[in-house]
Image (cartoon, one colour):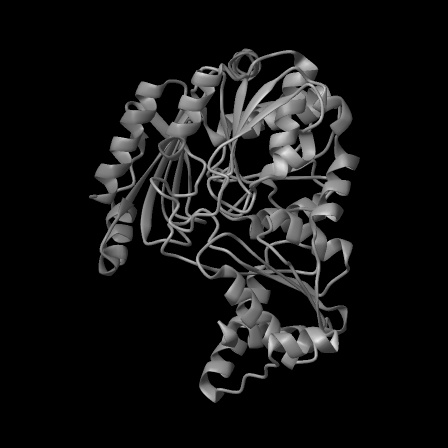
Length: 450
């Protein structure tokens, strides 16, 4: 942990960013605040000014805080949506974005150096606080002020909606009530206490982990449910009937909101695991769509280069123009509520409306654990057996940028790829019916030999 922090300090010095200081934040996981304190001690030992979050803070608030304070970068102690046994060390660039691969590679070199030499500078946190090298900084006010510029929160507070919020024991707890309480909207928050075990769930906002949210929506007769992951940069939506909307459906609806309700125009960026509904909306509204490998570290640079309206990925992470090119589950949730308010439609009605424009699209992902020594064998098995057609429909395009992505002539697609953060093989499919999606997943499973 300290070696990673020393590496960030070395990187900031080498990049000429050390004088701008460093923001350090953390999530609700076990000992996150202690890891953050250790990182602050090392940065202070390297004479780098530190703004240390005094409590668990959503990653998007830390990302925006980096921009707002013009800091050289940020360290976030979080394992995001991963199981309770994990913790993680994220580095954010001075733009508040996920560090691009070249920056990560540079930091990794310095980590190796710190581990090899054992040379790690540090000052005890109490001394660093006394000397003013480390200061506590609550980023919530800066963050809330920014969100209020992006959407009319006063108008939204008056919406006669009952909303169930599930922060999944994560850092997003309390943020929707903070933003939206005080009007006609009723907010019910569940799983908002700190519990590093994430009992009964993994803090990833997908259907398998949102049974309690679905049940609460039905019990409370609520209009919608919003779930954020462990560090609140991803969003999950459950409709008024307790049914989960897939991340691909939510991404397409957010695109529709910006294009049709807000009448904004601009490029849209999606990862190759995301939905072709975005491509169809691009055609309808005459805006370009760009595809990237999986990960916001690939989405963000295109968003910046093209001044894109929105960027999104299959995991429920969405970033927006006029803010920062980084995922924000809380802002995405606010935008979804505004879409409901402006259209007067329920989530299920919004989905029907979307399908009236782009046609029905269904999606599913299956995750498989595998022995690590089988990775190359699985890759070779898929590579050697790529089909020219599936169920009589020709494969029009094969993309091997990130796994094996097969696009059929009717825009149906199948993807087989290894997770970049877990020892998991993922198989994804999107098509016009749930039954066909299931059959495609079975094809992918057979190709992988899982």
